[in-house]
Amino acid sequence: MGHREDLLEGAKRCLLEKGYARTTARDIVAASGANLASIGYHYGSKDALMRQAVIASTEEWGAGLARMPAAGDEAERDADPLGHFAAVWDRVLQRIATEPQFIAAQVEVLGLLPRDAGLREAIGEVLPEGGEELLAAFEGVPDTEADPETVRVVGSFYRALLTGLMVQSLLTPDRMPTGRDLAAALRRVTTGDVPGPA
Image 1 (spheres, rainbow, N blue to C red):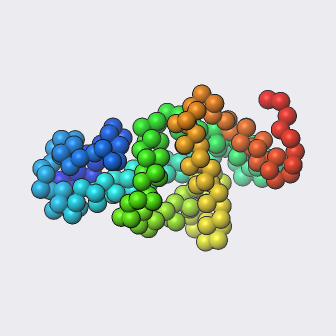
Image 2 (cartoon, rainbow, N blue to C red):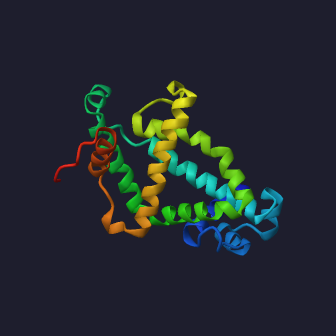
Image 3 (cartoon, rainbow, N blue to C red):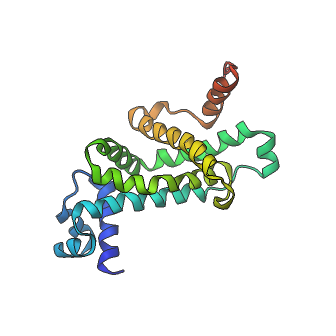
């Protein structure tokens, strides 16, 4: 790898280990083996590099969601969409539970968005693209088959649920719902059925 790639990898490590706001340029240099001047040369500033680290780590995590094995074949998903929903979210919840550093970094960045215009703009440029990955992960819909309105509406729903679960995992990790709990809640919201005992 060259210095540019080394710096990005170092910044991603710092994001996980120290967080976005607490990472200094010297931390990135120590983690990457590059020199201080190379940050300015390749990225313009430490902040620009950290924004790129946030985007890259988020895209990598999202790509991992898209690579999750599908829950059942298409016929099974059509026959039991809530069962499919529960199975997929169980896998997502497992990832959330086993990657607390990544989750903490994501939640920290969300809290910084109102006061950091550069970070907000950088994330805003790539956020709509994540909708296709979410549909691929949760519904098995290939990027080429999803129409823009479905991506916007359904992708926003999945993003809201995912973000909320990330925050909840930091607040009450011992009281996280299961995929089945989420499916029961969705049934209640859409049909008025009261979830029965587990």
